[in-house]
Image (cartoon, rainbow, N blue to C red; front, side, top):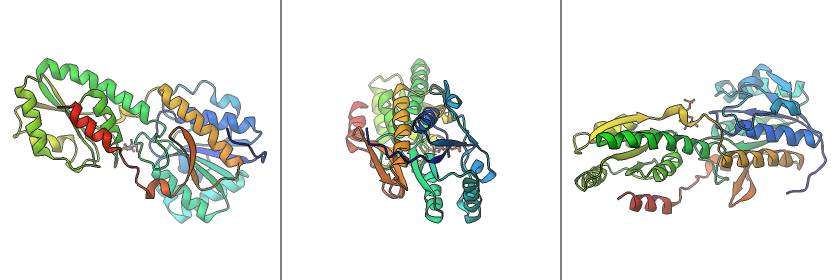
Length: 329
Ligand code: F6P
């Protein structure tokens, strides 16, 4: 645990971008730790949109009672285009100033951090980012809040699809989320024992994939599953289907898991991660850290400059990719 500077501050907190399960647990930790150390905490509704519209109110300990187990975010969230303009950020700053808010905690992904960084470059505001996105694509933290719940949600669905696939001897192409990142696809693919996993970080060899699937069919496999990350260069699940349907001896079905991956009660892992990072974000603010994201690397709390979280690429460990290939023969 780090030492705490006893500087009392007025701190705003918001959730931004795509929601991630565990955002509520993060808010609870931010608000409870903030109040414990006698800071004043303001909640901002609907992310940067609420900041621009002045939807800001003081929070109390009871504002966050019994929310640790809830998916979504009680403050709500938004993808706010207006905040990308200087005019939008000016309005946001005026509202912060009018409430006496000197520090801002933003829970979100890379788009939200880019916006925060702009605001902090332009105005005398202190800011810390907390990684909340199911994509797990931020440099500076091994895991983002919401990723573990998302892969567990996806796995639960894929296991069910495996049952019906096996009953009918079918090949299912299942699309999972992850706009520019294959983490969700890779981890759910390994967990579900998928025959193939297509991710944007590696070249998707569809010819080799067809040969492997047919070999499996001849060997007597009763079902096959291909997991496709939505951002894969081979296209979405329907594109992959149309590219391979005349090349394989399988009856093919497509399933797009979509937003069910984002909702639901956070896993134990996400509740712990959210609590730790929410708590540490307040300590960072009180220790006068600025323009940084708080993350966990090798089980240690680590601050990374906001800009590095999107300019540096978080690498997928090749050992996972190799292992997935071997385990799925
Ligand atoms: O960034 C998280 C994420 O769930 C991505 O995986 C996905 O591409 C995107 O959000 C979907 O966003 P929306 O719900 O706004 O369509």
